Length: 235
Ligand SMILES: C[S@@+](CC[C@H](N)C(=O)[O-])C[C@H]1O[C@@H](n2cnc3c(N)ncnc32)[C@H](O)[C@@H]1O
Image (cartoon, rainbow, N blue to C red; front, side, top):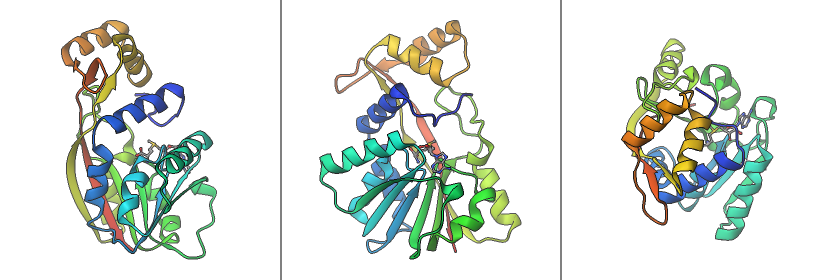
């Protein structure tokens, strides 16, 4: 499986289209509110295009999105301006080489970013209440109906680390639709070539079996339900 998080013109467009097509980030944000209060300051570390930060903003005091990709942060800043949101800031930053803030956040979120075994000690310096992780449920499939491969993004891996180190946590499992809309069949093929290792014949067969008619101006839609695990670690 190829890496999901190398932003380029296409991966940015696909992600924007998927996020704006369906309420995935709103649903995810609502689930995180079990651990985040309206008066909290929050850091969305490895925020990518920042859709989770944008969905959380109405429910928190302040949220900072930080990502190593200057392109992702540029696009998030544009969205913040367009939507006239006043309680989000977006920064380019590398978590691994970062200095913790003078005033810790109340929660730091790692949503499909990072390796808790590597990051726990440093992450603890960033928050006075919760480290929140969003990862794939162990055994769940990716949108190509194959098991996820990134070990550190797997709920068993996270639970194992937390249990071995005696760190108390709460874990919530949930499923949220996050399929991919396409303007054309050609674009669907390009998407599969970008994200799967299948050969062109297998890609065509897969698309024939799974693509359905799209809505909202999109000709096609590839349905997919993401099975997520949320870990909240009280520091
Ligand atoms: C799989 S994406 C997840 C993005 C977003 N959290 C989401 O769920 O849509 C991983 C993100 O981590 C960012 N990233 C990778 N290494 C990083 C680092 N050392 N510090 C901060 N961000 C990093 C990437 O640029 C990418 O945007």
